[in-house]
Image 1: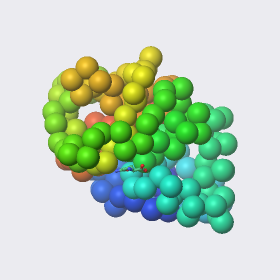
Image 2: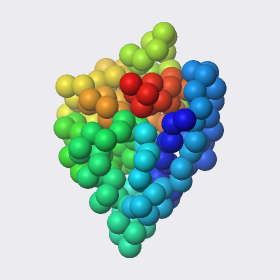
Image 3: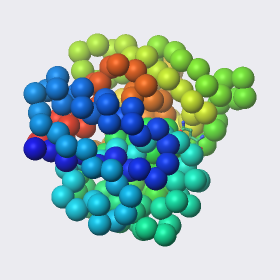
Length: 186
Ligand code: GLN
């Protein structure tokens, strides 16, 4: 039985839970989801998801309970694989848990939110529906790309940390969540 922690302080969490459960079903794995609100909730988790939302609000919300400071420590020690989307990717970069630099809200106003087909290197197909919501950008590119919008890197994988500027949990394609579970059992 795998336990997947979803940071519950703010943001789009239930869609991730749904994606994890359907990824688990596809892979024939037994998975339990743990909502992470305080640092002691981290104990014994096998993987973690940092959802999108508002990264500044998340930081404020985590201060009193120290969830994030404990999470950053465990992630830096490679205790479990991580999937961070949008604001989650921002936090991973700001904490220097990934080397790739990120810029918040970096798409112009008109394009603050949009959908576009992107190219990915995960699973069997190279095509993925990218849902971008007030998305950040990896402005200097990355040495560890895994997803591209035209020529621009929109997803990176650094070791067991995946950081995406788009929202796979808002599609029915569970490849990224399957990656997380596969890393967790290996
Ligand atoms: N704009 C948000 C931030 O800066 C991220 C948006 C999202 O997670 N969908 O934190």
